[in-house]
Length: 151
Image (tube, rainbow, N blue to C red; front, side):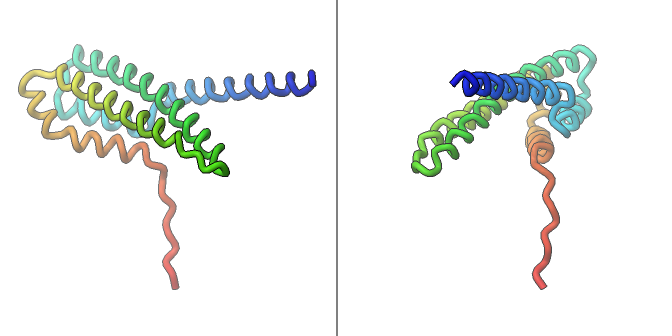
């Protein structure tokens, strides 16, 4: 019994270490391409140094919030599939809530970004926001493998 407890504690420690390591790695490298969207937005809106600094602060706040939600999403998804044999689908509701929170956080983030701008920059922001979102979505999609054509 004592050996099982030690292994359980060791497993929990390794799991926590893994999550922390991945979080630090993600924080250092950031989402690939996310910086491209940020650079595109700053360039298109012609942000000055003060606006750029405030924008990067907003980006870091947004990333922190999204990391927490991503961790929740992964846990909920794992619980969903842990209960696959039981047919328990209660985690779908949790996953929908997490997706809703994700959209709301991102919406509020871009409201704050828009408010950094002058009235002219805000007009330009309104014209490019969908392109910024596409750039962000594209950067978060895994690379797709080429499909083999049937003979």
